[in-house]
Length: 308
Image 1: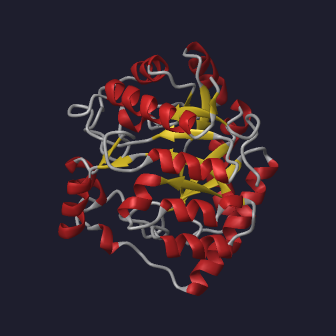
Image 2: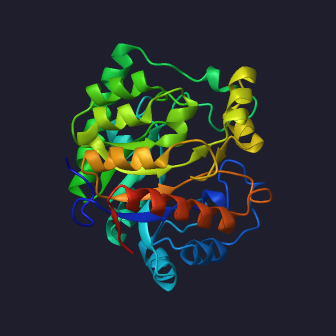
C-alpha cells in the first residue's frame, strides 16, 4: 500500500487534534483557550504532532516557528470540500493556501471531507437530515475528487478522505461507493468514532480498503449516550454536547483489535487522537494524556514502534 512516508512498516507517530481544546463548530467550547496552551499541553501529554484548528495561522512563515517552539510536527488538518457544487478549478483555488502551508511544513496528508449538504454544523437539524447521493452523483464527485487529489499529490500532500457523521459520506456503503468512484490518488482516513456512530465496522472497512488507508483518527464512544443520540435523532453538535465522543480508553472501542488490524495491512503513518468534548467537563490535557497512554499500550501490544 501507499502510506505516508514517515518510517518503516510497523512504525507510527502519535498526534493529537486541537479540537479538544477549542472547538471550531462550537466556539463556546474552549473559546478562551489559547493556541499556546493547546500546543504546550499537547507536547506535555507526549504527542509529537498536531493537526490544525481554528486558532492556527494558515501561513507557513507564521506557523513554522510556533510548532518548532513546541517541538511538534504538522500532521494534517481539516478542509471543508465543496466539489458537488464547485468546479475542480474553483476547489483548487479554495484549497491553495492550506495546501501551500501543508506542503511547506511537510504535512503528509490533508484531511478532506465533502460538506455540500452537510448538517454537521447545524444544531437545529438532526443527523438524518443530511444529503444523500445517487450513484450518478457519486461518479461525478469521484471524478472531481480524483482530479483534485492528483493535484494535491503532485504538491507532496496526500488527500485523506474523512467519512463523517451528517455528511454525504457517512456509512460503510457510502465509503465503499466513494472508494469505487475515485482513483488511488484519493486516500482514506479511518475514523473509529465516526464509523461506530454510523453503525459501521471499522475493522472490516480497514481491511477492505487497505491500499487506500493513509491516515487514522482515534476517538472512543460512550455507548449509552450514543444509544440516546440515535433514539432521539440528535443533531451532530447536540450529540457532542451530550458527550457521545471521548478519547481511546474511556469508551468501549477495542483499540487492541484496531491496532492489530492496522498492523495486518502494513500501516505506517500518523495515529491521531481526535475527540471533540466540552473541556469544562473533560479537561483537554487530562483526556489527551489518557488517550495517548491507552493508544501507546494498544499499538505497542500489536507490535508497532512509536516514533517521537
